[in-house]
Image (cartoon, rainbow, N blue to C red; front, side, top):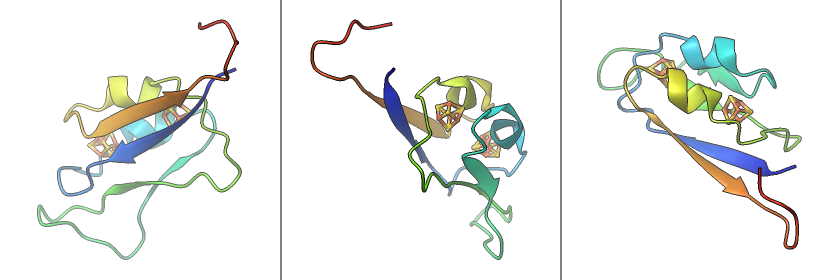
Length: 80
Ligand code: SF4
Ligand code: SF4
């Protein structure tokens, strides 16, 4: 299975929590104690155990296109 990671443009994030709700791995949280320039507590990627699959659900649901997903494929593995 492909592994992934994401980048969240926290300065654009409105903290709506949709990405938090949709990530089945629980890899996204609303950052505690942080407020961005828009005045919102932004989402933050937390994946200490490397569980992100790169499924892109978070990026697809974000209404402000704040999330970019990167996927890694093992050499020789069939792509999905
Ligand atoms: S790509 Fe999928 S597994 Fe990774 S953070 Fe987004 S929703 Fe979660
Ligand atoms: S869905 Fe987008 S705007 Fe909403 S909390 Fe996640 S990154 Fe921020």
